[in-house]
Length: 146
Image (cartoon, rainbow, N blue to C red; front, side):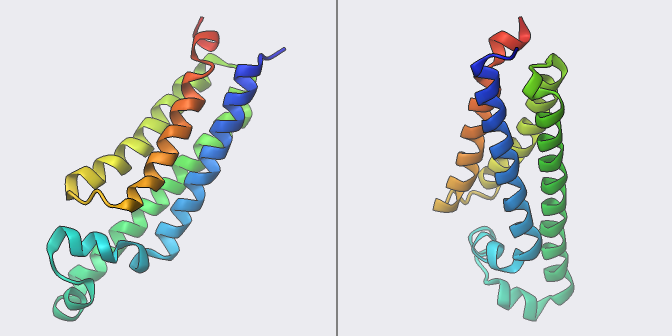
């Protein structure tokens, strides 16, 4: 019988995985819309001007963002699967797997913002995911790891 902390944490972790998956789909399919402000903040140039001046590098910029969206979607699916297959049962291996996957996902997203120096209101989306992750991983840690 699993405890209420494991049940709650599993629900939070699953919600975080779905949240990250939805974000990744936005990164893949709405790339140009999402990253226009990031590009301007980092380079001081509008993306439209960059596209007109240097179409190949501009396209490469979008491709790398889409690629990271694909990576995010794979990590999100891993989180969802591990949550359903092991975490709901309080299995120790799943806690470690989720710790690594979630740290990679949210650490890279927040690190990205810090590196480009663009800490805008949109970072709230990363903070929400990070908070869900921390709650989902910390809540049952003592029980699962003991």
